[in-house]
Image (cartoon, rainbow, N blue to C red):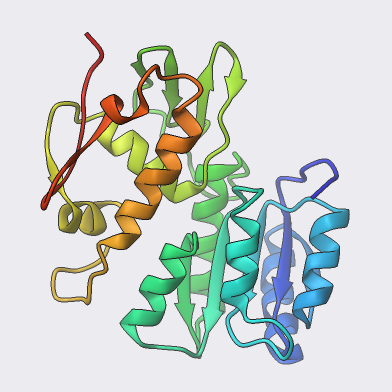
Length: 242
């Protein structure tokens, strides 16, 4: 996945031309640059040739399932992914989050709501704010040699950036701003993923993201298991280095 990142460049992947045309019309009014793909193979080709700030991804494509594309993306990139789908079961939503999705919008949808969600995601992840005002009140956090900046949404070690997905960043920042406090998996799903208490919960979503965080931080932490510790049968806690 090559090319220079354009902070306002979005790829819409959907086999319904009406959906693509509607979203393109609304997003271009907000100064986003829009590219389209109607098939999974087209999307993968575009992703290999260029770089995008965000992908809007349909779950049900004629050739490749959107969830497979999302899984593939997470092997090599932290680009934000928004699922746009007619699938409405909670299990589908949780499966999307487990695959690394950052948002999940059901069809039929409000294009204005989608635009607002996208602008919020872009503001947090890329610094392209549109009409969204960034929150400069949040504080940086330093854990060992790891600097977590909530304004730029970057994790740095000696000026070297550790690339994270939006949800990985949210999870790390929440734990880092509440060190030595134990959080259950249910708590983290409610706080980071914004799931309600009465929604179906899959705790493996949290486990998967913690594993990814540990893998990405392992080069910079002497013992990655010591930073974010597992509390068996309960959840996780971030320990401050002594």
